[in-house]
Length: 120
Image 1 (tube, rainbow, N blue to C red):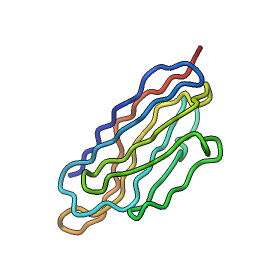
Image 2: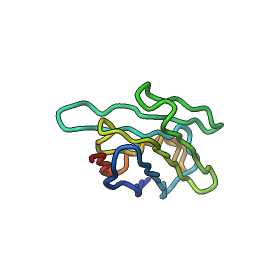
Image 3: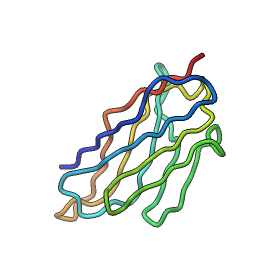
Image 4: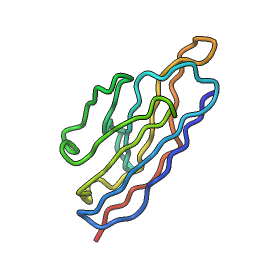
């Protein structure tokens, strides 16, 4: 019904930046909240940042001031600009989208994950 495709991960050195993108497609009627999560082996997936349809944002404490989440409602896209990356940011990053499909049923979709590695 709804598919998410992520891009933009990679390997960088501390202090560098990356920009993640996530595109939603399928039988979408509307999208409400969009978010980015991350997960490292052996730990639970954690919220990094979220954004509502109107643009209100929320960030996890470790990324405040360094990461910026944004969205393009017309294109069903969500972005995560990650600046001043640190080794602790190394993880698989997942896009998460909530909304309604065209027959007005709610959906919750996850992307396939994109690896971000920060290492010197």
